[in-house]
Image 1 (cartoon, rainbow, N blue to C red):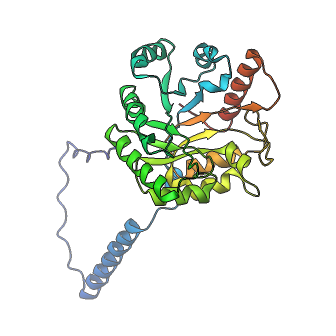
Image 2: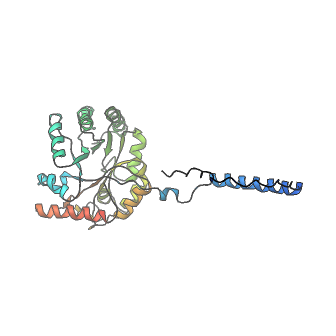
Amino acid sequence: MIHAPADSPPGGAAAPQAARPRLMPLRACLDALALAALGLWTCACQSHAPTAHSSSNAAAPRNVLACRFANYAGCEEAAWTHLPSIGIRHVFMNAPAADQVESTRARLAEHGLTAVVLRGNADLSRPEGLDPLEAQCAVCQQMDVRYLFLSVKRQGVEKPVIYERLRQAGALAARHGVVLALETHPDLGTNGDVLLETMRQVHHPNVRVNFDTGNIHFYNRDTDAPTELRKIIDYVATVELKDHNGEFESWCFPALGQGKVNFPAILGILRDHRYQGPLTLEIEGVRGVHRTRAEIEQDIAASAAYLRTLSSFR
């Protein structure tokens, strides 16, 4: 904060006595008063005028950059040491069982890692589908994790029924200080329009969107991730940065920067809307292509390095 300097103290020497002032003519007095009034009015107008580019001048939030343990695809144990070695200190992981919370917290701390998103599991197509959420949200609370990722599918159940169950899920999550982040999956989150309908129908502040950039390209034709993100940005709680080759339903999710997803545009939209949630690096690989542990680690390291050329992260 910049503080205005205090008034300068008067000089030590006595000031000479001022001469008696001469009276101003009436016309001059009136002119002086008019100019003073004009000056005050101008200052008042300027003080209420909007400042150009005020939002762009404000520092944009630095988002947490996380990585999914699942990116290591069969060699997840490598993640515990590899992620800190490339400067990633935050993770997206499966929610541990209640009796494994303390050991999981201890292991994360040992490696200098912090969980920022936990993956939950709830089949809301069944009436009892809400039951597991209580324990999973409690685990989030115990681990100081704000976001629980869910992939919710209707399985033929009418939408109003699912919307009501999601509202109930939101109320349950709120009791634990948790936000449910719904994955970009059919048929409740296929694209921005569908996600927007789901959010408006559920209408609960603890039910929000996990925006997956790669899934937009996988599940949709004739659109792209930036276009869909703009539609739903006000409801986005978490983001997965995943690349894709741009072909409909093609299982091709390479290292970031090697596909068609426009990451500079994605990060620009998030920055402009002052998004403050986590950004999770995700690589699901290419169907039919086996990668060794070294190749997986190389893809993750290269993806993190690519993202750092576009922005800075925590």
